[in-house]
Image (tube, rainbow, N blue to C red; front, side, top):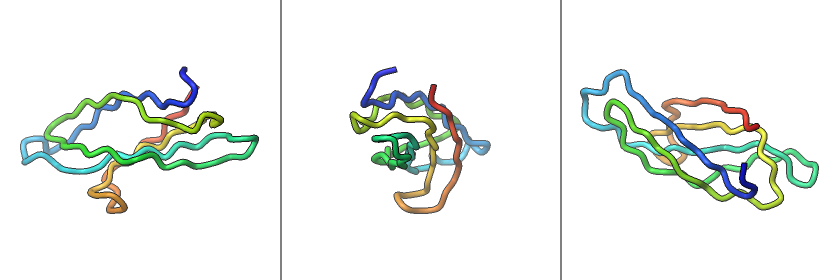
Length: 92
């Protein structure tokens, strides 16, 4: 576990994968502690294009004094748009 960074590896799938690829954004909302106070941080969205499946991995910066506890992964049709899917992952 590296402080100040969120490492992610996500597999997005679609039940109707034979259709044209779906353009969307993936966004992480990270809940954790900063200075003893619970905070929710929305990280920059990542553009995705999903046919049947799309594997994504990478890193996103977190504030240095932030200790993440839970991450909500949201897939939206566009930034600030309709929610297409969501999962909550606990950080250990």
